[in-house]
Image 1 (cartoon, one colour):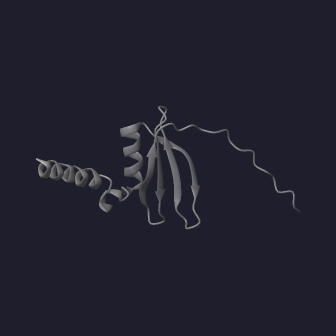
Image 2 (spheres, rainbow, N blue to C red):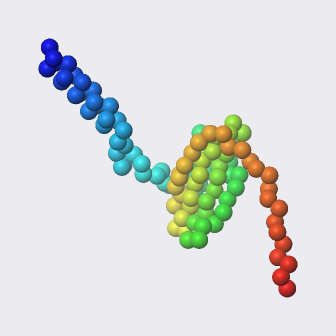
Image 3 (cartoon, one colour):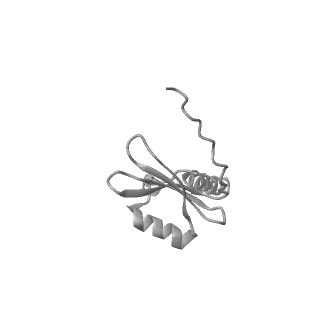
Length: 105
């Protein structure tokens, strides 16, 4: 009986332990053309671009958000490929920061 309990406990530990490891393939970003990504976010989540910026490498970072607060971070590389980087809930737009003028002459 004790051997049976040990085997069951060992199997459970292996099953639970293996659930903590995610295969690398599932961690790969989802990429497509910018239009496809943008259309998909609009259709599936009612998300539209709310902010953007240019990276040092020439990529464009965009945040898409919906009125319900869902958001997605997208990067578009100079070659035109767009990839989903992160997504979540609870997006809040912050007040626009005041720009400091350059007083140097």
